[in-house]
Image (cartoon, rainbow, N blue to C red; front, top):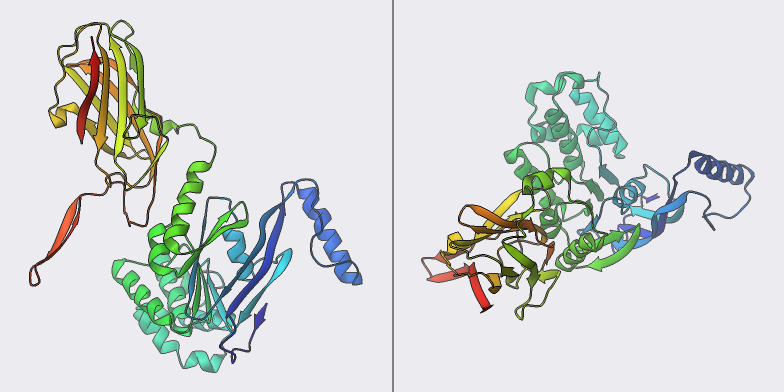
Length: 436
């Protein structure tokens, strides 16, 4: 798996060729496969690799290939169950592939479990040598770096205390300090770009920036911000296969699109509870229709972040409405209340008489709600009285190359006073028609 020859700098430091991992949903299939592999290996018969799968077997990772040069960072993203962790564990040598091969020219270290390989009863200083040895460094070489490791970890006199007396944060500091000091040629990272409190995290990030000069990085993460900021290119895994490989911004957009292309899931119970009850008064309003739409009023299911959001409401009023009020509370998929859109905020007032066919469009300027699934309700009131309250169809806001954080983007600007330079980032209710 590893090649100690690092003299040829033209060769990739990491090569992955047609890598695959097979799992089984049934224990008996796993035992049967292992028995066959062991028999073939013992008697040196049969062909390497997997020609066909049986029973409950499935490919968790299949036919993954890529090269990585020194100084490069590649991100691996995908939905849960896409094979990210299995791929990283194969690269780290923690599990053996069932197909393909991995070549590492130089040393490698995996930040999959920062505390793996430590001896709990041994002092921190001794664990430095144990961890460094696991990374392929000899005792003399480690002795030359041990003071640097201790200084970076900021553990002070605690370095000579047993590891079992350390807090989890202290153990993570020590593990990262060893890894950062020995600076392996290939670093495999699962979800942790850095550890500890904010100040120590910035110290770790600065160290990793220094390591970019000689090390190559593979980052598996659910943080699209970290992926976009750290990686040169990104692989999108989908159902164990490479779905896309390319620039981070494009990969993230594809990943977020995959997230929405899955079969619709029931609203989680907690989200349903947060959104509140549904209600309609058939004696007050009839023929109610409400949906997200384009500028022409046609129903849509998704919209780009850079496009305005529009919701259309149509109904036939059976009563005189003295104080029509329309509200659209909005939640994110993780049940966080994001914002509320209302005629009470915009001070829009509409006269509605019995028999009116009302057609109203709500419009929000582009660039407010960030990419993701928008969950919302439509409420129609006459003063304090609810006439109608039901969920709107889901709206998918698709990402663009414009960076976003959190749930909403707030219009803002920065002005450089010494140069006079300004950069700027920037809801209303519209009655479409009303027929008597």
